[in-house]
Image (tube, rainbow, N blue to C red; front, side, top):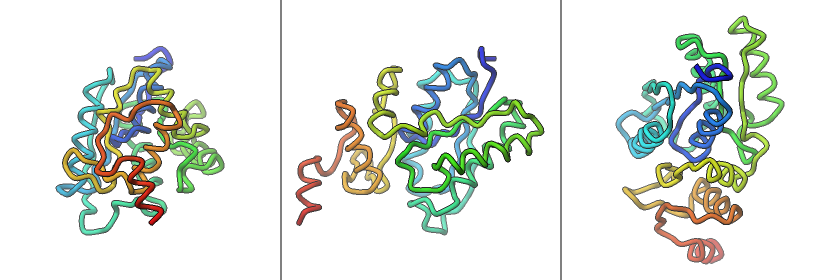
Length: 213
């Protein structure tokens, strides 16, 4: 058990979720990582490879994968309310492992209501009600961070971002460089003054040239 107890941390293989786990470990929590694999057998496999790499690189207590087959639906771009489903499943899992809290890696760039402070406050109240424990905590350590600040934080903690996966349209080892996720990531690394270790089909300069034509 960590000095501050244990948490379930949602792990998707992206840079935010990896940073979230690293922060919770640094803060003295024992971490049970939980991954929701919701595109079983499809392009999500690349992300699941990243999940495994990140999980093996960090001193977590355990890692569990829940397979939720939504492969017949177009959910590459997370629909409204889907993050809430993942958070709710994470909350349920805390009861199975006896964790004292749930840790979520959303940052200030989140486009979804789940990433807003007001939503997180209400979810925290719900979590206390569901678990029956006033001491139960929902952690969102990156919620006030922009992407550059997330990357600076993870870099300071020694996180290897080459292990992570961000691109919506990745083909093998190449990231497209023009999807929303890639643009946020590239802008974040540029803002942080850190070199992104991933390889892109389009360089940042060619990306902007393409967008302006």
